[in-house]
Length: 229
Image (cartoon, rainbow, N blue to C red; front, side, top):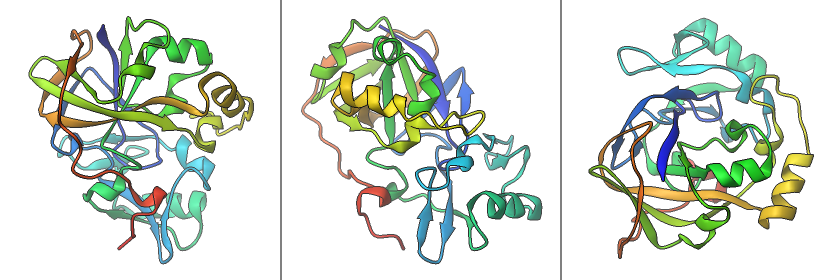
């Protein structure tokens, strides 16, 4: 197996940036989901504001997120976010573990994506693994992925939501994607993972499945009930 593709999402629920190399920290991919869309009532995501998923975001040279190529704190970005998410929506920086839906990494496999038959970006993974036999990852829970010096723990398969139905470029909805995930994958596709041992990984790196006794210290973000402060 090998690392086929890598992504980072500087702003939660906005577009991701594809990487050739990623630094894995104890907190996932360096620079991942540093900023989110906030309201007085809690965070907003692409689950209810589908068009957020089409807004491009990337990391600037200073490590801060850029939204549509502009600094995330700029007035123009503030207006853009209100236009897509409502008049009370603002961007807020928060680096606690609750910003991740379950754990700080999501790993997809090429064989599962091929069976699903859609753009892998709909799944919003951090890693796409290549060379994985069909269905193999469904027995990986409790094991780990060794990539160079880095070690990634595998908790379980991710139960998927309406976000998978949104085209990341156009915002158009295709409900058949979620129906296929239900029918072919029993609603669960891609792996909830976390960083056990930090390291730098890159596209093309060899991936080995290994045993581990490690378990995550924290699992579960705002979207599954963690309090929003």
